[in-house]
Image 1 (cartoon, rainbow, N blue to C red):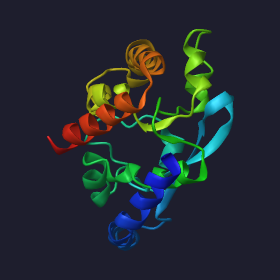
Image 2: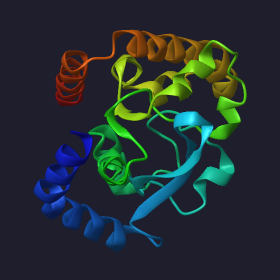
Image 3: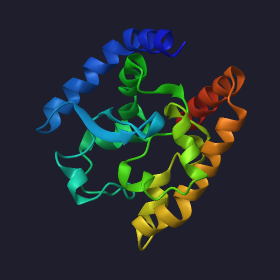
Length: 191
């Protein structure tokens, strides 16, 4: 199902991909896509695709995006991040088998290395584009933007809640749950 729906999504969204690619190219130097190493099923690394919404090499200044005023974000980047358009290239990851449409969001190795034994169960399934945590923390960068120490807030407050929601998803995993999550995600983005 993942391969079929991601293929259909890539075909349907291809015109939008071209428009976004053109806007990104005209706005700033660098590639259209941002590729970041994330940890997938079984703890294996893979390259996650996103539309580039930040200046080149921004991740060297920190892995977390903090607030709507993060100076690393490009002008079109604000728009494509607000409506989660930057996430659409992950359909490529789904199509090639690195990810599912629904599943725990893949994390960078730095934070996965902090997981306890229980939390590592999230690595037993394919990561996804959306999940319960994506819905709950749709405005995560705003939460981190008001923190005096965003890194500490993420590790000590946000990440544990996300991982609990990820484990909840694994327990409740079904086609019906996945469909509900997809529709809740779309509704949350539109609002």
